[in-house]
Image (cartoon, rainbow, N blue to C red; front, side):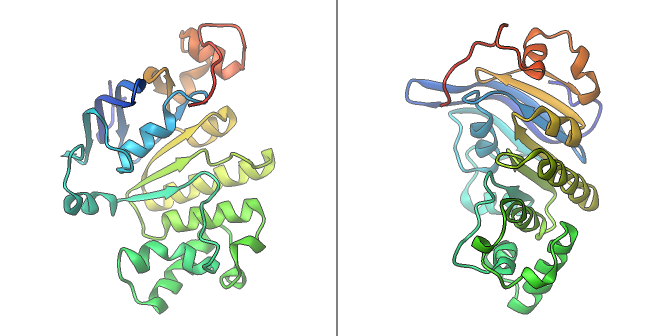
Length: 260
């Protein structure tokens, strides 16, 4: 798979992952160009979440290669993987905040737990990250349950960028948000990626979101990448699956199926 003219930050080749008889990833080839934003689109059960979990190390692929800055991560020892995962920041679907911790400690979690930063410095860094995503200092000591869904998503984004990661992952960032708040989150993602100079991978089924945040788009279907190109080419891709997906048509080569 071409890197579309840029040096790849992550290179994926022939990636396979199955759960028993269920073959989810069936030979993924994909490059993430350094400093660019890639959106992987596709319906439920197509392998998007398994792909991102394999890259960040939550799942071990059955076979294939995932290279981050040239380092092979499939089969990597835990000690070496920790060095790689320090480069990552992740916004989970639903924000996945810790209810027992105040907002600032949620944002600073990676700094205090993985980096052993002293609490006063971690709080300052958390406030800086909160400010980047438009959160005021006066909510720092509030509980996540006191916040709206959109504000919780901002807290999750602040946590993702607090460690100043080189690579950001976004898991369905606009799910559960109204269109206006979805647009706000997308714009904050763009701002965060640009301020960090980070490489970004987003998995989404939201085409409006993909168009706003992505430089490049890849369509995954039945565990394979069936199209990959610049976001500006998506409306004239020449691919029937892409055309069906972006226009939300029920009739076409993509057959409806239940989520896995």
